[in-house]
Structures are given as structure tokens and as C-alpha cells.
Image (cartoon, rainbow, N blue to C red; front, side):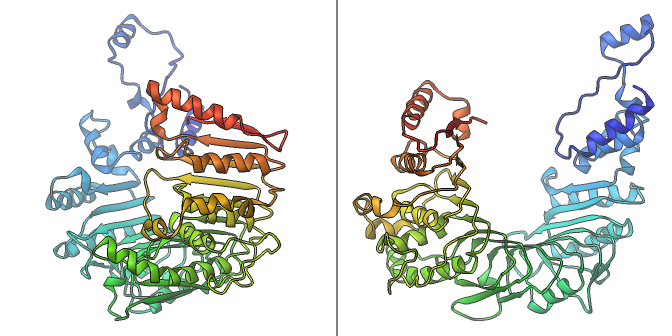
Length: 529
């Protein structure tokens, strides 16, 4: 190894953040003595230790801090090398009790001597009596001008109001570019000053609307905001010019101090380009008011309310889905202009519920019935990429057909099939019959896919070969005039198949390959990656 090789190695390490195994074969460039050759045969030559500190520190950065510290027993060269690592990652999973974990963090920070930290991450079950020590950890990280700070805390038993309250000095920081806070209370006394912050993720925390405003005003470079299972706000008014991505993953209605049988959450974000609404919104409705700049949307949420018995679920769903239909319809209307749309299983089920009883007319481009209340439906005229997460049950087909029919300029179509997902099917099982769909399939699917070029079907469960999946594949091959490629990826279990699985796979492949194709260039690929 020559000195001029070192920048190449360091560059390769920096561009490989997820490296698991590193092997370096070093050519010494000189004639080895008999002693050296003998040591080499016995594996006694330590060539890793001859590498410069910059590369060794980069290697240690891939390890949890506990493992990096343990390398100090290797030799004198390694004894205190870990103390200069700019990445400190503390995870409670490597310890048996909280006290041992806290003591290990204290001891590590006492010996650590790096003047600048790239990443400081602490993950453990927070207890109130540890607040003074956690305050010192945060002070240590900010004094080292940390770039990425993660306080990934969780409650000892269940989510409560005793989360970690951030120290006031943290609200004035000009170095942090990525901040991850979980089970933390955010209550700044004055204005915030996060001048370098680009990515902010907050989870399991109360968030008042005035705090959200302060965060947005005090973060002029903020590009991405994620809220996971937060509460206390009912309106998100995103006025930031820099924010481009907003993720709302669940809302904990039960933690809110505001009493309301149902909370209505409003989202106003005229400047963002990407929006994701995910997770559980029990007893919470969601309305999107202004998202005119949106390009990409993911709708994978669930608003069902939980009841004690299946009978209660069925009775409540009969009435509840009337409300759900209106909410899902309005959200889809609000994002009709996006280029990339992902629709989750529950949302697709609600769309199917709307369409099942009132199939679209061949002569109309909208659905105009009083009960469905889909008057003046705007087509997804700008949608070029559509992803549907569906278990490919019979009652999903009306929703699939409607979204396809609403996307005349679709170029890329993706299906993600989960392993086993029984989402709110009690009502549909009783109110929707398979025969109705098959009798009306010509009505549903009488349209041309003139722009569709790529189809990808990714299965994560055992649903390959189902008649509904076969029907969708057959329809797409028959009607997509310019289709170039259809990739079908079976579940991971099929990567090590049994004899019966191989036989079933072959039969399925033969059946799918026998379907007629309208595009002369269409190829069907079975991927086992």
C-alpha cells in the first residue's frame, strides 16, 4: 500500500455508509524475509493496524460505540483510538439495565476527545430521574458542534406526559443539520434559532401549534419535517418557503388534553412537494386544504375506530364508512394534480367501497351519483407513477380499476402485496359479492392504457397465483398498448424454494406467459432478488 492509495480507500468508505464487512488486501511492495513469510503463514502479521488513523477511525464509525470501545484491548495502538471517533452511537439493546447503560455513556464521554462530532445518537427507555445526566449528554454533543443529533427515547411502559424536556440552550444551535427527537417535550421559552437544520423528525411528543410555528420560523433551511404519533395540534399551517417534504405518521388522539369525540386535522401546505399521510388516525379525520405545489403523495393511513367485538365493528362500519368515503374522496380530490401517487390498503378499500355499488359509466369520465357523492371528480391527469399497496382480494379490484381509469397518462404502475393484511373487511365481506364484479368487469375495464410502459408487482406474502392477481396481469398485458416491461417479484421465501414451490412457480409462470399481449415489445420478467 502506498500513501497515494489512502485517499481512494477513504473515499470508498465514505461512499459506503452501510458496509458490513471490510477486507483490505495490502501488497507490501518489498521482498518479504523468511520471518515475515512465516508470520504471514501463521496469520500473525497485523496489517490493519498499519493503516493511518483517518481510515481506522472511519472503520470504527460503522460500529456501535460499545463495540468501538472494546477494540481498545487489541493493542497499544488501539487503546485510545476510539476516543477520537466522530460518531457516538449508544443503544440500550446492548445492555441489561438502564443504570449500566447510563454509566457506560458517562464513562465514554469522560474519555472521548474528538473536537467535532458528526453523529451523536442515544436510544433507550427514558426515566425522569435520569434527566440531569441526559442534559449533560446533550451539552456534550452541542459543545462538540454535532451535525446529526438523535435523542431516540421511549417511555418505560407506555406513552405518557413524562417525556424528556429539552434544555433551553438546544433551541439556539447553528450547527445541527439533522435532528431526531422521540418522547421529548418541546417548549422553547423564546424564539428558536436552528439556522443549519435541514431534517427534523419528532415522535411520540406533544406539539402545540405555536411550537410548530416557532420551529418553522426558526429553521430557514428546513427541507423535511416528520411527525410520528404526535398530538395536541389540529392544524398544520406550513408557511415555510424551504420545506419540501412533510410526513405525518399517526396521531395519538387519546393523549390530547382537548376533549372532542372526533378531532379534525387540517393540512395547509402550499409550498411542499412531497406529502405522506401514514399510520393510525383513530377518532381523527384529516382534511387537506391547500397543497398546490405537490408532486408526490403517499396515502397509507387507517381511520377505523376500534370496538370490542366483530359485531360492533360490523355495525359501526356500516355507518362509519359513509364518513370515511367522504374523507378519502376529498383527499384524493385535493391531490389530483400530483405526478406520483401511492395509495395504501385501507384507502384503496374505501375507494372500492365507493365504486362497488356504483360502477363508472362507459360514457362518463366521472362518477355522478348522489350516494357516492363523487360529483365533478377530477381525473389524475398528471399522474405518471401510481403505486397501490393491496392484498389483491376480490373487493380491491373496483378500487384498482377506478384509479387506473382515472390515470390516462400513467407510465409506471407498481403493486406492493403485503404478507397477510386483513383490513376492515367485515363490512365488505357481507355487502360485496364476487359475482357482481365479474359480471361487470367489462364495464369497469373498458378503457385503453395508452401510456403505460412499466409494471412492477412485488409480493411480500403467499398471494402469488391468486385468480385476482392473474386477472389484473392478464388485463394489463391485453390493454397496455406500449408496455415494455412487467417485472414480477415473488416473496423472499421463494428464494430458497421447496420442490412443491418450484412446481407451483413454474405453473404460475407458464400461465402468466400464456396471456396475450397487445404490445409487441412487452416482456415479462420473474425476478427472485
